[in-house]
Image (cartoon, rainbow, N blue to C red; front, side, top):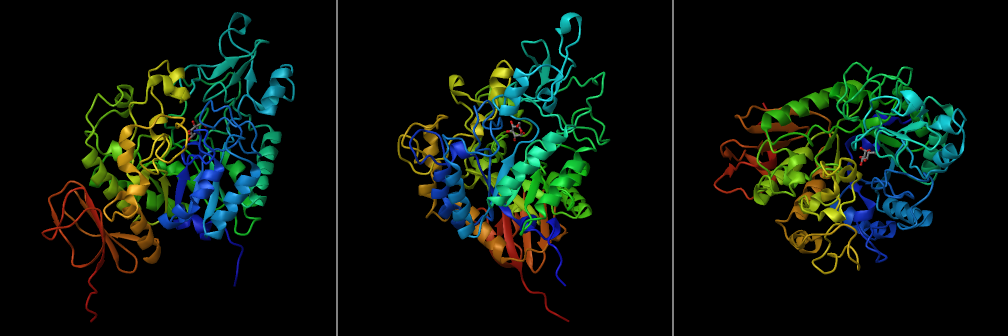
Length: 548
Ligand code: GLC
């Protein structure tokens, strides 16, 4: 009996999704900024890498006040990046090679250049135009104080005053005014945007700050004087984040997604406790939620095991699979994180331009490879970030006058921001931009990028790129069953079996561990003397057990 497909049997359940940060991937028209046609030119590379889908960070028209997460028009392409026709070509090229396209949707805020916000500024307090956003009168005599103590994620108050004296809310930069999701017009607009892209052939959506849309805006506004996007309580009663009402929005979106064949998929970016995250992933809602636990984890076997167990169990409870992420456009790349001394405070390290603690690139390289091979061996869906397949490290010393992240300015230079993981990729060793562009790249690339160029890795069996390609090839051919069984292992070592005779040993920091009997399928560094050394992961097919 056939039934309507839902998120429970979606292609996304065990997919490997590759995140492209469009302005830093490939520039095909020589202006130093990556573009859509550049991505299309690399579809063959992505196919050979072996990913199932590409997730595009925002490519919409934008003043780039926050790397494109300030969207001027949700139904268009930034003219510097191309046209809607270019995007259609990208979709077609991906589909032709059996890959899917996921795009970023930013529903918490528009940009201040969006026609709705412009109309709101031109209209009077109390008007329907203002009611799409969160405009309020200020406190104190003449309303000179912001309406509440809420703070922006990028630093400073979350309120900005407009000339007629009212204030508007922005949990991020002032150029990103928050929408008011208690207004039905906002719901209808996003349903229409999702339909627009789904009709064009987009296969899925990554929902930006999915946990922030509904807020407690009852008067007097409640106090929340901490950084806005901080971890939230498990009660669903924070004034700003992860409120229970938000789920009704995604239930309505799911009804739209399921009208398509295959149903459109979605993944929530929701920085909430593990127990709450899975609510967004229910089949009746988005189907997936990012699990950022590995991305925040130290290199430690027990930590990994706990994270893996919790997330697999939570996902199963919600009817979804877990997602796994080691790097993305918001965090220090994992090859660098794992090369820094344990306990290094990443914000301070970035602020010191990478000088406050010494990075050991070799240890980082080994651990990043081993961590990736653990992640890719887990049931569920893995998200890769562009450049991690090259083993790329963070660029910690971008000259300060070239930094673009609003965090740097808004925090009054106390937080460096995220540019170090957004530097355009090195495709070749050639000047002026390592094959990224024929012009200088929009964020400066360091000389050491030459060592990481894709062109030098492609035919080198020991390279990071070859490891990713091999791991993804194997992952496809091995059983994709959704279970994992732990086997006993000494401290510092994880050992687990996947369905159908596929097993994994990851030696985090333990003594050299004997190579298990059977066929080695993948090893993140050469195995000699019959041992798996520290900082190494091995996939193997155990010797067939004699049957009784
Ligand atoms: C998400 C994005 C981040 C952006 C923020 C505001 O966290 O990943 O890059 O700055 O939302 O849109």
